[in-house]
Length: 465
Image (cartoon, rainbow, N blue to C red):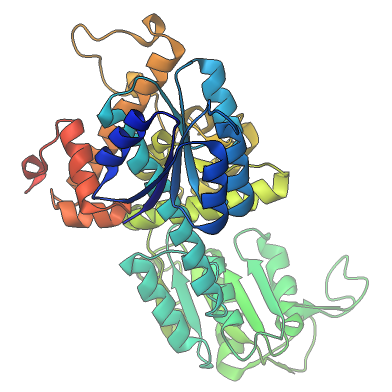
């Protein structure tokens, strides 16, 4: 049950809003701005619904106080003087949205639900990040899905064991993140973590990069140089894209793992190898072994403890958490004040398949932060590959007006409604019409989801297998 403060100088409107929101929420009210400021100073509210024009302190002052004292409190401003300018001013000042008087009860309920959903999402994301940070090396493996929880469990179990780990998964799933998590969760965390992409270094240089060389070992070797095996010391050596390593070097790597020793290029004596070895690949190594492109003996030495990272399309419930994490990181990097995502942008993020996985999501959010002109990331800030305009995704129904024939506000409301319906349909399809599971993924109360389904004329039973 959310705690909501309603502020308006007209008793009839306050009573109407209170009646709409109760008993689903705990509702308090105030007849003027000063009373509201006292309530905000002494009580915690999840949402404030305030008129802009009040007899003493206006709604923007209430909004500013909420931003100062309780930045997680969402604010919806009501105004009888509706205009695009008023809406832009309200949103730029930090409000979640605005309502133009007179408004339909369903419009109020929908905006209240969305505002509370955004607040809940932000709080869950923050709590999840804090909980993961407390777990040491697992802070970057964000997510609450079953798939990523299983990965974290595997990492926790192997972190302090001196065994070789093979991390597999599609490109962009976070294989190096997993390797670093293993290192930071282990007893070696204070020692070096050394990483190399075996597919990014020319074949003729990779052996020297890994093992080092002595002076004069080959043309251009003007001085002796230590390789990554030595640089890693007793820490962790991460060999990424191990499946791209040439066969002749696979033989030398296999021997180094077996003997726990290696030779610099051009050197006769062996040097000890003390680092913990973690390798990764996006390739199908058993298939590569069958085709003669990867040595079977090396594969078995590497595959002592396999960890398979799931693609992002199998982690649907983690997309918004990851997106929020990348937003905060990019906003801090570029000095932008971006509060979150509009409902339409959230629907687009969750409805996309993310073939480039986490890397693609991170780049999409970073780009959106750079382009954003409003306090929240909108549909138009996202890459074209992530979301098509709602009007272009499916043909208009007969008699439905085109975007160009609408006012700005009508077009935005229309786009929001279409994007919300698309999201709800995708959500129900994923969970085969199970409203309870769909509500859990969406992060809303079951009753709120039922209300949204009724509003958009959707019957969950039609999505059941």
